[in-house]
Structures are given as structure tokens and as C-alpha cells.
Amino acid sequence: MFDGFQNETFQMRAILFCTINDFPTYGNLSGYSVKGHCACPICEEDTSYIQLKHGRKIVYTRHRHFLKPHHPYCGLKIAFNGSQEHENALVPLTGEQVFQRVQHMNTIYEKIQKMDKSKACIWKKRSILFDLPYWADLDVRHCIDVMHVEKNVCDSVIGTLLNIQGKTKDGLNTRQDLVEMGILASLHPRSDGKKIYLPPACHTLSIKEKINFYQCLRWVKVPQGYSSNIKSLVHLKDLKL
Ligand SMILES: [Zn+2]
Image 1 (tube, rainbow, N blue to C red):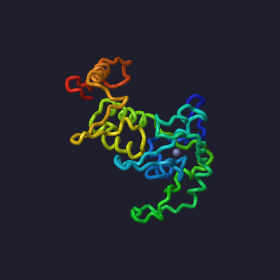
Image 2 (cartoon, protein in one colour; image 1 turned 60 degrees about the horizontal axis):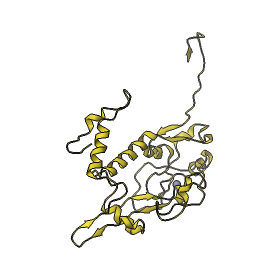
Image 3 (cartoon, protein in one colour; image 1 turned 60 degrees about the vertical axis):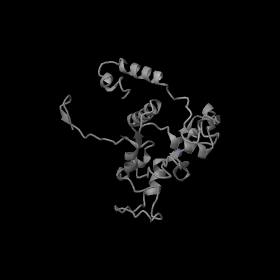
Image 4 (cartoon, rainbow, N blue to C red; image 1 turned 180 degrees about the horizontal axis):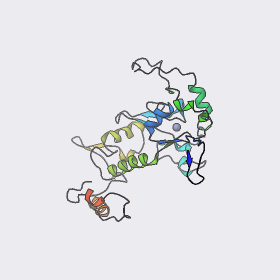
């Protein structure tokens, strides 16, 4: 490199400090499988999950123990899944421990037949980043880009609040899964023989409240350059975003 101030060349040394990416990319970069029953890279085989019968999704549970010890949420039952969580959270693996899991891995880059589960392992490959001599010594090698998470969570919250078809996380399947899990009895679907009725939840908005929400969003004021023109995205007439 050339130093214009000193008017001389010098040898610059650089370090790849950490990567910033979304969760699927975390899987590609680290070599951990981020899908399926063991998708939590901290809990690994002990990842707590439920396969929803009606919603059909895998949901990952028992993560309240990652909160600070004695956090009030750990003792709550009804607000969550009907049980308390007081066990200690697992400690994330060090770079050295990850390296020990993957160092002898002989990765064959081809599609593994779905039936052959014996070959499947939660660590998929030895990340090429371990070629860097210091990579295993880093405490934090990968960071999740918060923007992706915020955007997805925001989409889901707004979709559920406004009950937007295709976006809401509430619905008959969700309520039937509550029945299956035996929690939140007040939200279980009820039937009068002809129609199935979903009791309103604490987040259900009336039409009037929805109009208020849309109006607030339409006239919201933000600093210049902060976001796109929200006004143009809100259709008050047909209550659409
Ligand atoms: Zn976990």
C-alpha cells in the first residue's frame, strides 16, 4: 500500500474480523445446517422444537432460558406455552470446538438422497474460513444482520395486527395447534354446527381501530431520507398497505 502523507509504501495487514449476514447465509458460511430439527447452532442436538400438526411448520421453543437468570418471563406459564423455563442456557461453542467438529470432514458436493439420513450431520462442511490461521481463535465469527430480522418480525406483527390474508400468523390452523398443545383455551376455535368461530385475541383490532392505525401511518412524519414515502403505500379507501 502507498501512504500518501509519508510518501512511502508499506505492507498492510488485514484481518477478516467477522461476517454480517442473514440466517440462511450463516448456514453457508459456518457449515451448520440451519434447517430441520436442530437448527439452533447453540443448542445443536438439544434444540427444542415442536412440529406443528396443523400449521405444519417446525417451531423452535424453550429459548426463554437465554434471558438473564431470574428474568420474570422465565416464571410465566400462561403467557407462553404453559411451562416455566429455569434451566441454564447452553454456552455457545468456541471457534476451537467448532473446528474440532468439522476439521476431518470430507465434504462431497452433491445432493444427498433424501432417504439416506445416516449421512446427514448437523455440521455440513468445514468452512473455508478455517483456512485463515486465526479463524478458530475468534470468539464471534458470524453476526446476524439485524435488519433482516427486524423486517421479517415487523411484517409478521403488522400482518397479524391488521389480519392481512397470507401475512397473518393467526388463523384456524394456528388456533387448532393451540388446542393440540392444550394452551390458551380462551382462543380455541368454537363451532355452532355450521360455522367455525375464532374468538378475538388481545391483538384483534376492530374496524374503527384499524382505520385509526392506517390514518396514523398515513400521516406519520419521519426525518428526511429516513424511509420511503409511507403515505403513498397506505390506501385508506380499501384499508390496504
Ligand atoms: Zn437454542
